Length: 387
Image (cartoon, rainbow, N blue to C red):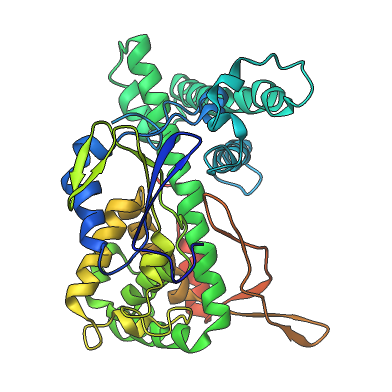
C-alpha cells in the first residue's frame, strides 16, 4: 500500500508507460468519480496484460474492452482458473507486461518459464473452464435432467451461432468467476470478522431474531429492515476490500482533469484501500465497527462519496454486495460462529491476508454450530440445488 503521506494524485512513468494513481480519499474522491464514472466512455479501457491474454482471459468481462459438492470438479476448475487470473493481472508480476516484445521470445529459451506455464497449463485450464460446464449443461438438457440455469435458458432458444455460443460461454464463466472468487473471498472476511468480533455477531443476531423470527431465513426483501446486518456487510467490504487497488483502467484518449493533461494510454490505478481507510472519514479505520454505517453515525456526504467510489471502482460490487448480504443474514440466522477449540484451548485466528490483485484471508480455523433445533430444521429444509 502507498504511504499515508503520499500525494493525492501520483503521476509517474514506468518504462515509458504513463501511470496515474488516485490515492487521496477526500480531496480526490470526486476526481475519481469524475474520471471513472462520469467520463467512463474514455476511462473504461483495459490495459493489455500479456500473460492474461496468452492464458486466454482476454474475453473475460473484467478484461474485455468496453455445484453441489465441495469436490465438484467444475468448482475446482474455476478455483484454479481464478487463482491463475489473480496472478496474471497483478501489476508488476510479469516483466512481459512492461516489455510486451518479450511475448515473442520462444518458450524453450532459458528464463521464459512463465510462457511455458501459461501455454501448457493456464491456457488449457481456461479452455476447459469454458467448454466443460457448457457441454455438461447440453448433455443434461438432452437427457432431460437439466436444472434451470443461465446457460440452459439461452440454449433452449436454439439456433445459436458459433459466435453467440462463444459469448454465452464467456458470460457464464464471468458470472461464475465473480461468485467463486470475489464474493467467496468477502465471505471469508465476514467469517473472520465474526470470530474476532463476537459483539457485532450478537447485535446482528438480535436484530434478525426481532425482525425475522425463528421460522424462516431472511431474503433480500428484508434488507431495508435489517439495518445492523446491512452495516455489517458494508463494514466487511470496507475493512478488508477484496480488490484493494481496484482493476486497472486505461485512458482511451487524451483528457484534461483539473487542469492536468492525462495522455492517452495512461493506466489509472484507484487506491481503494486508501479510500476506505481514510482516518478523516473512518475513525480508527483498522477496527471492525459496523456502527460507523448506521444512520446515527453517518457523515452523509462522505459516505455517499465512498459508496459511489466503491460502485465505480470495484468490479461486480452490486452482485457481490447482494450475495454477501444473503450470506451474512442467512448464516447469522441459523449459526453461531466462534473460535475453534484445540485441546480445550480457544484458537484466536490472526488477521492475515495474502496480498495480490485479490485480497485473500490466510486459512484460519473457526467453529460453526447451529443456534438451535429450530435452526437445524430450517437448514435441513433448504434446497441447495434449486428447482
